[in-house]
Image (cartoon, rainbow, N blue to C red):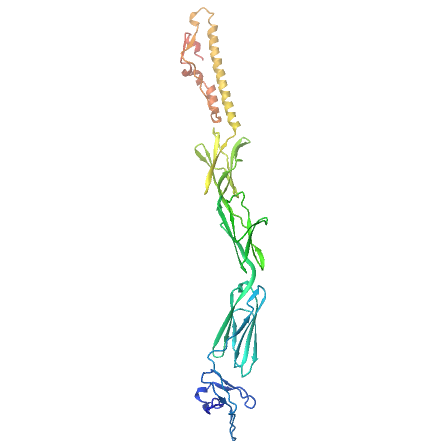
Length: 440
């Protein structure tokens, strides 16, 4: 094979080839049937024209000057022909094809796709020594493919390459539907709840109660003056042409100050007095009982949900009331609980009974003295007559009505000191003989 200037570009003997084409040309077939020539690492000067010449030893040379071949050398390959269905629904098959033309079927171009899938290669012979190479990619569409670039990259012999891409649009029903909100809210505040989702096309939104009643339409839902008594669980629904999907149900955690229930009370059971204080609050309250001016340790505290119950069992002494105090981070409350009345009245009756006994003793003693004096008035000795007078009345001791001091009061009533005390009888003037009262 020679150029128009008779420069040999291919010969079985390497030394006969001009330096510019050495190691770059090769006869592909048998010269008797296929005289195709391959030129590697094509350069801008490899335009030709070229013609074929046969040299047979012992015979004349045969040249085909009338069948010249020229090469059009381009700086860049022809553009890639890339086709794909750009808008699909989730789950549908996507088929993409990437085609290029080339002139070397021995070394066809390599295709590389940016997405996994099933690939198929096809080669087609064109005119004027041109070939068409096509790669087809097939895969199942997914929402993760939405707005993603599908790229085809072609690499030619000699590491020359080019690439092109298209963006896939995938339609899919809403996913990741959720309510965005602040879970903890103080009672009386206003709360805004927002519904969000991932969908194509973009979702519209509805709000429903736990009983599926429609509350509102729109991405946000506002709850005014939140109350622990009226707050309800809600959920949102995201809707588009591909489907409708619900979020999880949410309920606000309403925080409020302690509320001591009127069912709190003190009571007596089998002679044991106990007090029970019931408090509703969120967060749960810390409970204290106050007796007089001191805080009494709770016997038992139990918290179930928002209700805290404190129980007190102690010696209440003479107190008539006990205070229940409750507090949390939002405030405090207190309630005065009355101790059982009949226990207190019983102490009064016992103390009153002791007083009556003392009074009877005193009256009986006084009557005995007078009787004794009067009994002696009929006798002749004047010195035995007795008269009594007092400069001030006799003071009767007062006794408390508490059960704790009841035993002490009885000892005072029956004790010997009360009858021999100078405090009681020291103010008595008498004309009787002192021996008359020696035994009193």
